[in-house]
Amino acid sequence: MTRWFEDIVIDEVFDLGEHTFTEAEIIRFATLYDPQYFHVDPELAPHSHFGGIIASGWHTVSVGHRKMVDALFAEEERLRALGKEPGVSGPSPGVNSMEFKVPVRPGDSVRYQLVVTGKRPSNSIPGWGLLFNRITAVNQHGELVYRADLVGFSKLRDYRMPLKLRVLLALTKVPVIGSRLRRPT
Image (cartoon, rainbow, N blue to C red):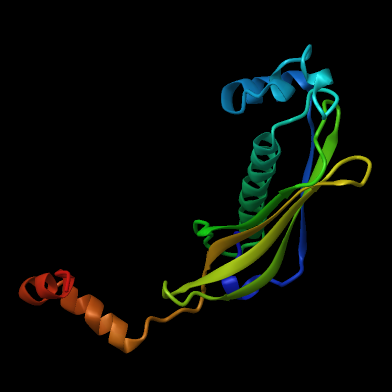
């Protein structure tokens, strides 16, 4: 989230919006990135166990990820419009789980949501916290089509580096001492 770690509320739901998948879009994405016949071939797909063209799971994920990034930018703009300084989002150290529950078919409208399910200060990167997030996607019938548990970094607003770390950082900038400190042991 583009909020400071301290401002993030556990279990707050962020509606990321909806996307309607078209057959042309499904085929175009799959042709480029996942060209299996049940994603790209309208003549063969009806004979698959899916009974027709379905979106690649990666297509479903990519749309949701784009919506999540768009929501981050919108949140940043919203905070600036209120005269507040937005927080700093960091990279993701990974995905803990990912499930594709129901196929996404042409014409399906899928709504994405993000929930921060937990958070804690990082043990390895000073000044940053870890956010544990769940993203879900539900089709127009209320069926869960996709769910993933993601981890992301968020910067702490009020972090002050401990004196010991500040001294070590300063010492790395002294030519003779710094080269010895940076040398592998």
